[in-house]
Image (cartoon, rainbow, N blue to C red; front, top):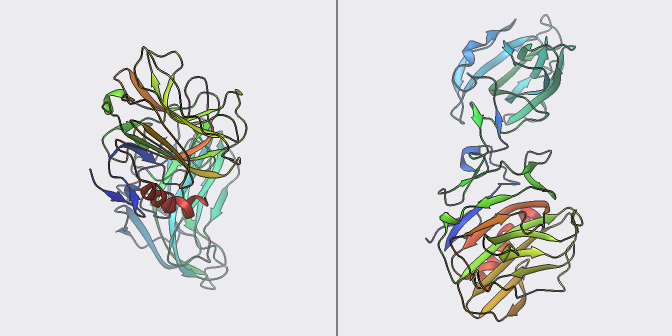
Length: 394
């Protein structure tokens, strides 16, 4: 394979990987590999027909198709209390987040422009309004409430000022969503499962997020106890040459005191667990390991020392291995070259694990992982580091 994605990132020889899309500004989530935190949108007609909503007070100007391919509703210079609403039964009590995408096109200073407004949920009517300083651009507006009455009213409306004074607003709205959680995630029409949230960079292998945590921004994170992502052994053949690459942030000292495994191959027949990969021995020293992949004589070599890492800061780490030579890179710079034995480093009893292995649980974030079945050159690894540098403030 010889493809390149994004900002000149080398993907030649890529056999597996993921990128959570952290920092991507593109609002079209269909082009991202990370679709968002697993969730369910309780509005079952959100993507098909906003005409099912009831026109509120001074009304709206009907439906149109947005650039996202979703159905939107348009409000053109209508006075206070315009928009639409619908009734929903959310099924159970608990914390829910109501959200929608709005595009403000102007209006009177006394009119709030547009709002996500929730009532009849067991609490007082409450709303979050859009940012009126953002003109002509889509913005997400959300409101989180503790629902004690499962029959709720969801309003997409604007109000303020008076009709007599002509206090009007113009705006568009699309993609309403209700989720049973305390924040909103990217829009989904239906449900987004653990295996459809994160897509393999080659779009050939499911990536399950069933065993990871999520931070307040809905990004996958590793809690230092039992979180992990696994690559099945069946998705990659045995090789002698390999490059393992990851962008990593550690949040503090290892919770278990044993260091971290970032990306490691786990051999089912080897009690030590880790065969090759990127490891961090404690919160300040990263190192790479590898072995022959021979289950009867697996040995670890190639410890790298003296590379300072700081907690809560991202690093680009890479490890290359070919028969006779291994190199470890930190932020695009080779930090150690060493000799190794000449065997292959993968066998059919192994799995590749991200975020843990051999009792070493990562406490932090791994937004990018890539595995290649060839050795990337020093200039190629530097090129990848430069591609990620601004995005992660490396």
